[in-house]
Structures are given as C-alpha cells and as structure tokens.
Image (cartoon, rainbow, N blue to C red; front, side, top):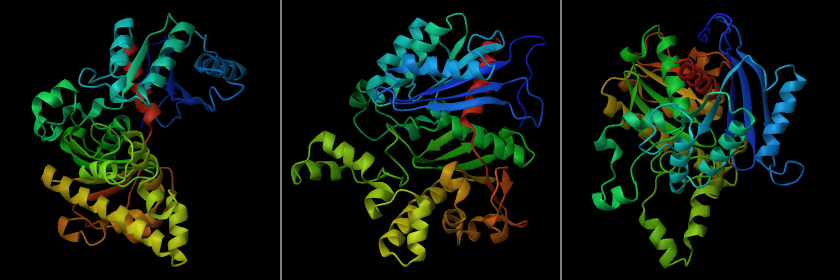
Length: 393
C-alpha cells in the first residue's frame, strides 16, 4: 500500500514514537515514498530506561536523535514534517488523531487512571519530544480511537449507570491502530472499498484482541475497560467470571494488587502451561505434552467463540483477517480456529495456509464464501499516515 505524497518540495518525513515505561520504539517514515516503495528510513528501540546508562526518557530521545543523525536523518532536519505519538488510552474524549497542545497533554494526564501503566510513559515521550522540537506539529494517535464507533448497546456494561459514568467504566478496546490498518488492508486485498466490506480482525500476539468491523467502522471488540478482557493471551486470562476476583480476595486472602498481577502477568498461556510463546507450545504438543495441548485447546476454543459471536453481530462476513505475531506466523492456530466452520462459509486451503511470507495474502479456498487472509499489521505506518494527514491541514 502506498503512502500519500507530500506537497512538492515540502517536508514529508514523520517520526513515530512509542514510549513505554522502560523503552522507546521509533520509526522514521517518508510519506512521499512512491507506490511499492518502502517508506521506512530508520527504526530502532531504546530499552532499559532508568536502569543504567539511559537515565530517563529525555536521555532516550537524545539517543534516538543521535542514532538518526548518524544515519544522516537528523531529528533537526527540515525534511521532518511532524512527530506522531502512540497513546494507549483516549477515553471518550479523543476519538481521532489529535494535534497536541498543552490542553491536550493535560487531558491525557486526566486519563491516567484508565491506563496507569501506559499513559504516563506516553505523556513523558510527548513532553520530551515537544521540548526537542517545539516548532513541529506533534500528533497523538490513540489505541482506543478506532473502537469509538462501537454502539452504546455494545459499549455499555450492565452495571449501575451512575457508577459507570462516574468512573468512566465502559468498553474502550485497544490495538485500534492495528485493527484499523488490517481491516482496511483486507478490503484492499479483496479489491473493494472499506465501506463495502465486513471484516473480523484477529490481532493475535502476546496481547490478543478481536474486532468486528462493518463497512469500515468498528462495531464490537473483545478488550474492554482494560486490555485484560477477551481472548486468552500470553499472560492475561481474558474473559472470566468477575466473582473469581471476590473469591480470591475472600477465600484466598489475596490483595487487589496480587490479583491484578495474577490475571495480567501470570495467567493466559503462561498460567496454563508455563509458556507464553506459541512456538514453544507447538513444540511441546508435538512431543505429547498434555499441559501444552490443553492450553492450546483453551486458546482456540475462546477464539472460535469470538469468531462465531462476531459473525452473528455482523450478520454478513466478507473476510476474516489474522494479524500480529501468532496470527501471521502460526498456521496451526489459523487452521484450528476455523476448522469445521464450513457451514458459516469459511473454508481454508491447507497449502495456502502453510505458506509463510510478509505479504498480505489469502489462505481461503477459491470457493469459500468468506475470504480468509493473513495480513501483516503495520501500526507505525498507520500512525504516520494519520499524523501526516493532520499535520498537512
């Protein structure tokens, strides 16, 4: 997929920053790159911030600037058009890419209780980047924004509305930049406009989420108030009876923080079999490991439930798209998740499914009513496109 060309002679490069609590990922992209041309000029990662040589995010950003300068792609280059920042949680206020101002930073800070592990780091990256390049447009692209089109009957939890409103409890969804990119890419793969296509997107990495996208708009997604809800993940439990929390507190004597750690960091595939890497689980299954087999079966069962549910939500499904590390690379997961769903119009071609590659491709049979695709996600490109488009207004 091509990137939009910039104005003749104008700056066309976008620096994308993903600031985590102890790391900063970056990519520099040229948005004037022609069709079929790789727009990436540079990419990298600064890790272990605060643990040694890299004291803080200011130091990390300066390391990134030095790395880019060393490649002749300086952060102070006049060819740099804007900086795009990944921000995890936008709440109900931020439903589209937003030009960053002091007021916007303050509003993102107010959302920290909804994403205490992510938004503070995102904010730090924004503040440092604005200090380094105060002259550049800087844009916040929110993980939750793509899911803001979910109708109220799907976004609301069935709890007291006053309590829900007071504490902003509702379904927000995450991985939004990936779901946006992949759903649009699926339509392009079918030679259609996004408005013509209904897609189930399965973002399967260490974190995993599903979405139902109708005509380009998200109408349902598996993650909720936080990224804990939904599919079985690498270390997160996904869906479970909320009373499990009460039981662990009352009977197990566990604190809220201990339960939080259990469900987010010691559950999922890791909790079930001791491994959260699907490749290792596959190896163990081949050797007859029963714990690995059970973990895989639980993972697949949850995935199939969501595929069936989202088929009902959409009414008509034109495509199912697998993406992210597991979705793109595990033929076994794709096969097992869709096996026996021929009555839903889903047929996977075993030979096509076994092929590995970095290009978007169909793995369904020629007679399948529902197209099944493997589409490598590109969240940085999605952020860069949104950033560049807003900076050019």
